[in-house]
Image (cartoon, rainbow, N blue to C red; front, side, top):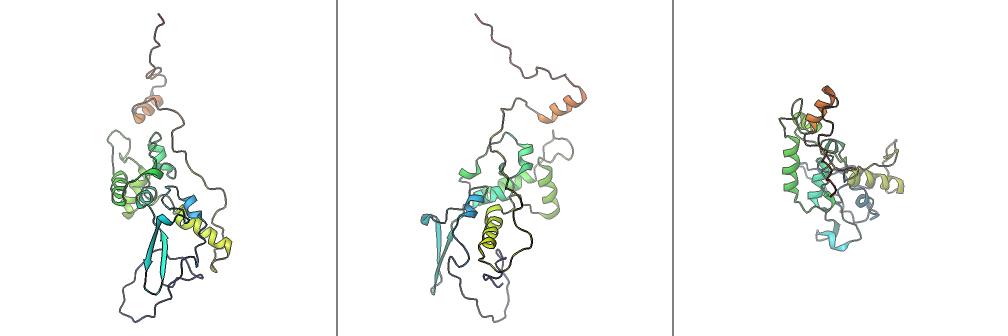
Length: 225
């Protein structure tokens, strides 16, 4: 696939063929990339290193030319992309509002992250109403497609292409701008400490028997001596 400043819309892809094709010239590092760090700042998992950090680069020597790119922490990328990051998944936040798992500082490997995220997406819990899926949206998508993605490539694709368009580094642009309003992020930590035990039981009782749980989790005050 032709990858130039005119058509930089291809991620990763392979085509196997026995046709004899003239290879395109290998682009120098920086031909497209501004090294501005927009991808680093926008990645919700903190997976993309600062382009100025020379210790976080991977260099590839093709003989005729050397290129380098950032060494992405793929565990954090996978956790965010596949819905295990409370900062970018409202679905995870809804079901696990008190789980302050700090993906940005996680050292989990990519394989470990895949195991965790896909296990969660397929998980069920008997005490949850309905189909018992732990996270309904994940379960619905993965059961239909076998794959699911949540973070929306916020840093690596959207922030990057937004900067490339605005800077005029690419010729092909979209009619609609990438960002029509300020990007959002959910708080990592819960706003208040949890008091309940089983939210499904509590919601059912509150709906059908209002007031029955009054003072259920209140601790008696200690008597002053």
